[in-house]
Every structure is written in structure tokens, then in C-alpha cells.
Image 1 (cartoon, rainbow, N blue to C red):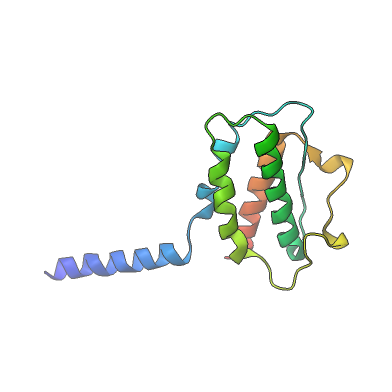
Image 2 (image 1 turned 90 degrees about the horizontal axis):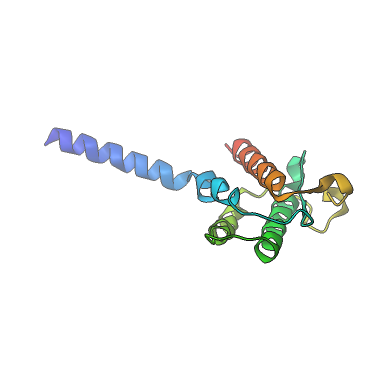
Length: 136
């Protein structure tokens, strides 16, 4: 009986921890995004070296890029919808007093920021990892 109580206690603690700190990066399914194929002329704005105060704008930019990919790229397994469905759960990771997505402080629109989809996905994954690390 005592063993069952111990197991129940550990399960309760583990479930509480996982609910408080979900593993969101696996839900975004970066491997699924790597299966998406785009034409060479389709490019994406990919924020890099994002300042802490610009996380909101970068997240919005990546979200816009994924919608752009959904319209202009071939996603045979329709996995991009899973990622787009998971992105709104990232809102609680946003920083508090940060400029909005239209602020001039957080713009990435230049020739160097335009990348192919594979590079866009790599930058997106790096950004999410950095976001999760900074929130730990």
C-alpha cells in the first residue's frame, strides 16, 4: 500500500511539473516543417540576433512567414497547420514591455533577412530555443 502512495505522489508531482512547463518545441514539429518544399523564388523574412525586447515582433514575423509558406509552398502532409495551431500557445512567453510588431526598433526587412524556407526553419528553431532558454 505504501508503495502505491509513493508512486501516486511521484506521478502527481511529475504531472504538475509537465503542466507548468510544457515541452512546446516538440509541439512545433520542426522536423515536419523540414518536409515542406518551396520554389527557389519564394523567400521568407527570417529574424536573427533578436533583442530580448523584440521577441513579440520576431514571433509575429515567424508566424507571418509560416502563413506565407502555407500559401506558397507544398505541404503534402499538411503538417504546417499543426505548427500554426501551436504558435498561439507561445503568447505567454512574450516579454512584458516590448515594442509591438510594427515598431521600427524591431525590423528585419532587408536583403540579408530574406532566406529560403530551410534556412527560415533553422532560424525559427534557434529563436524558439533561445526564447525557451531565456524564460527558464
